[in-house]
Image (tube, rainbow over all chains, first blue to last red; front, side):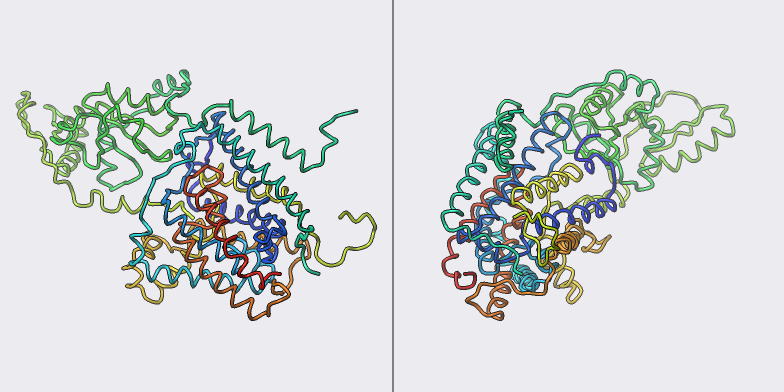
Length: 201
Length: 217
Length: 180
């Protein structure tokens, strides 16, 4: 059976919702395992005290990236059927900056705030309300921002296509960058006194 | 057992594994398949043998009348021929553009051309790319014209033939054709005008919004 | 870190090794790609929620608004019958399970020592609002864009990721009172 299964018609839309639920459970599970339900731990990333956010995110990215790459190279997975979010470079960058602000001010991102709320954190729940408010505001003023929102489209494009560098080489480059980053993170944490955030008693 | 690998901490082991996989990736090649395919010749031959690779004009006409939207109908001829007449709901796709044409992997694809050669070639190409539900219109547009648009009641028809002809009359009129009831038995082939393309209103309106599945985040 | 005694460990268990959590997360993401051909996400579920809410209260206004309408366009089903909505529900459940197994379920407010609870909650709301807005502008959040898009070398996702880290580090100094 070829992957992605859904695109090959292995099951229909209704089953896909069950799949979504199960995958979500896995997602939430590992987020909480790493301590991402804790806003203090998440924010500590940006004070160089506890660089777990960087470690978890990039480990996840290179794990999935390596998996997808090799499964595609051996022909089991059809990479052309894998969804790629279209790129709109300027609004995505500005949106990213705003997201960074929201991360530090609020202490969570959408996914982690769900985990936080699920483990009883009131600040996580309030954060969720904030997200709803933010999206509502966006929706209401959408007619005014829609031009910006749709500006600078680049289509569905990978780094490999953009820089005209073979995919495999980029995989290696990202892995190197991640490993280098992890080493630097360990060094920084130690230098600043190992203030790793743990769960409060 | 002095295995240097086992002396490393877990984190370092993970880093080493990641590094190795990354390094191999440099040489492992392009993850995109592009245009090369692998063919299982025996499997394809069997399919042809069992004649499960085509649909008849009657079947297709039936599906269109019922308003079924679970298939894609592809016309492989030239633009000029397409504009003169095409089966309703068909998309024009010249053979050369077939590999770029966006096709879902879980929908039926029906191919037709004037006779059967191009649709057979397109059938092979699509099957080679791994599409499973690919079919040719049996007899192509010629058969469609003959059986659906201008069905003929043969002389000395049996009652069953007459009954099925009555049914075909309705089908033919639906597609704008004209049933031939002349009993002279003469060939009136090339003077028959092809029906104009104002097809039944229910043709395509619902097909478009149905397929728009959101996959973003 | 390892407790070899036979004492019952009270209180919450420490968090996992970040690399292991990352691998777990990465495998879930990989599985999503293998099974569905798409990655994870979070903010989209909230968009569906907001669009549903707005359309319940003011249906004409919702339909006329291009943004909401994107989530309401398929009139054959409720906008809540959406892959991301179900996935996010799973996130709640998964987070709860992990927290419960590790004794980390607790009604509390995560904050630094120098800020009050109400102050923290105000910031949480404001932060959430900014992030909700930014996530829609960027067409995704850290789960959907950074993780998911990052794994497939999506240009917009990587740019987004850099911007998130950049933006966060930029203003971290100004909010240190909240956390330290």
